[in-house]
Image (cartoon, one colour):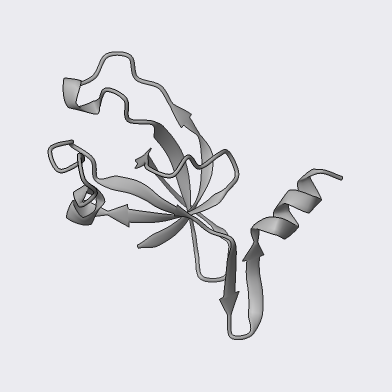
Length: 104
């Protein structure tokens, strides 16, 4: 799995029938220090993530393990919304702190 931040949504009205009903998000990957990387990817969303949230991303064949998604052409899937990340006793990310900072 990888860590990413939701940067936007992707809407595609003309697509393969197996992709009907799949919410697509534009993700920017995050490094171990909490810094944004230049890499972006479009991923399906199973958990209802929103813009600016940090998420867990499953990639490759593991993205299709969830029931009902085995036959969909997905390479990446958002499988969790991150609450906190701690590295070497230092908090890298806190959803609560980000929410507070955004509402001031």
